[in-house]
Length: 244
Image 1 (cartoon, rainbow, N blue to C red):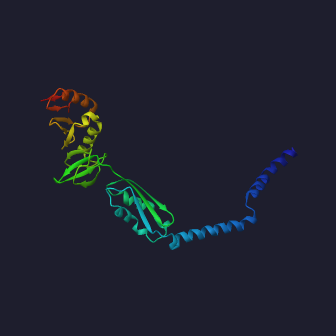
Image 2: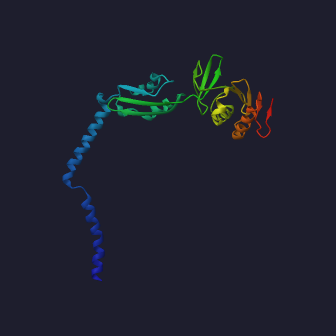
Image 3: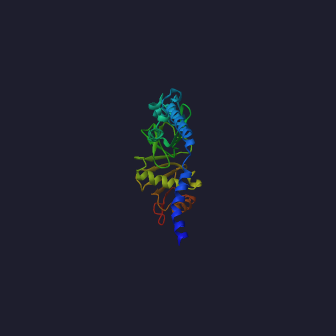
């Protein structure tokens, strides 16, 4: 019994002994204090000294956007410590520009901020005012205006293009579903309402598609009827198509 009590009493003392052994020796305290002081000094130098002030902003990946416009998002941090630059704030301002799909902002020591932009790619060209075209990406976002349609871009007439416009969404669904042999026939597209997507073919024929539902069945029926030589094909109801 006595031996059991001694064993039980020894337990807490062992714990205290172990904890004490893990506490740094007093001889280490001066070194730790010196390291902390050096770290504070380095941080202070980085924060306050002009040697680490932002001198330039470099922009990569812009074609539609003006690089100077993108760089201006970091103007507030020029000649200030590079540590003070709020990269999230800079990125948020750039991301709000319509042509920007994504952006990455980073520090390039000792005195530069780098901005890498991924721009949206045009998918639709929508006539605007008779002389220009709105560039619309694959998600329906309008991000640019040009005077000529780039190669391989769909020429699409839409009343109000945008990511929340139903006609834009239905048109994108239709065009993204077309096989290459049918897509190559299309000269222009008209979609003045969500259910009235119409494909105008290069040979003068028209293909009334309707909305973006049942695209696989519409493709099968449309190809069969076009091969038969009809001038006007309506597959908006693919189970009951009409021709003329």
